[in-house]
Length: 101
Image (cartoon, rainbow, N blue to C red; front, top):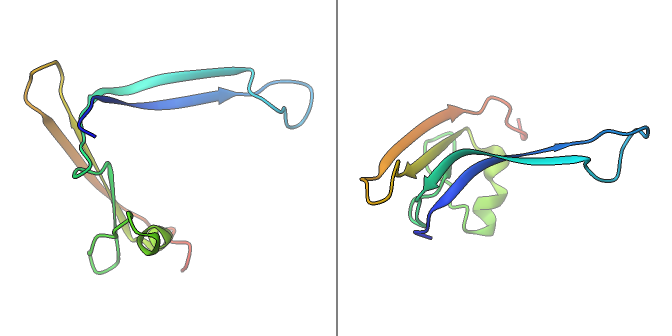
């Protein structure tokens, strides 16, 4: 927590003559955003119930309720260079495909 992190995408490509190869033939990591400085008090994802209350995903009950969440907020805190002020970005998405409904 408090250390610089990267938000990245891991792409694993499979090829071969069998229907389901056992391991990828190519693995690539693509950095989407560097210098992510979210702390433990600034979670990357926050899940919300239908009444707008946040789920406490640090508990087993809260984590188990994530499939029933109605929305998710992504908050990214980053620095574009060392010693620069922190830039904060957030966005909320409504989840229309709730598993339990």
